[in-house]
Length: 324
Image 1 (tube, one colour):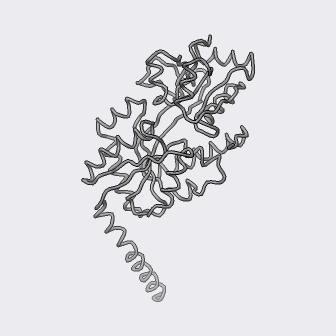
Image 2 (cartoon, one colour; image 1 turned 90 degrees about the vertical axis):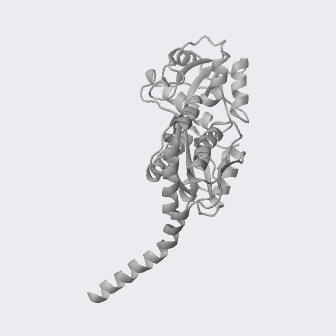
Image 3 (spheres, helix red, strand yellow; image 1 turned 180 degrees about the vertical axis):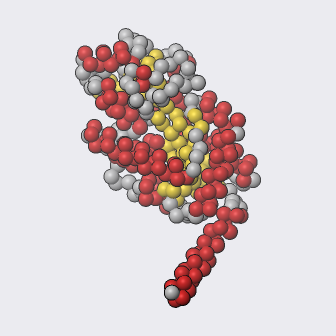
């Protein structure tokens, strides 16, 4: 019994010795600038979220938090960079739902969200708008569904590309509605939305961030929003769930770090991000683009990522979506 107690005591001491550098690092962290990667161009949803949060984090930490845009391959370039970065808290990434979708569909990625990313904090939710060209006779989600059911495959929709989040969420919508739509992939959401406004496309399910300028200019018609409750940004727009009960499709952003980042450093980052999200100016900046701030614990964000990844893999498998 004494031998066992001594052995356990040695293990406890060893663990304490190993943990000490991490605890010390967290107490001093950060001592230099932090880089926040995004996988998309400046002005997009994840970039807006990253900049709103990074400005406030710079104030909280007294160290610069610099946004580094690395667009390309549906966020895979930035994803690979964060997976290979030193796990010290000085390189993090604003993860977008589109990158999770890409992970679910692309088998050749050199990184895996579950294996290589440590969840730091959920940041914001950004629902989608169901937008149609002005020449379409549908004035509601129900009327559009009735049109599409009457002529399967006649009506097309745009997306940011095969396997992009617009593609996958529209397939979820079509499946729930029991309709057949024709997919037209683009190289980005802006070009697709422009063609909805121009009458070349019938429909696009796009984030509020990308759709709102055309909505406000009265160049597209909005039929519904994909959150379960109406948005303060477009309060007159009904939810899709009012026609298709329970259907919720949400874009989102959250901060991740390399997988082996010390837990005390992750916790320090998490507290600062939650403090930033409670700041009125950050909340208002994100609300202006249709995003609702969330926050929460690293464990809650990890659970969210796992659940979303499983959901997208199921939809992609059932829809037969493959990268071209």
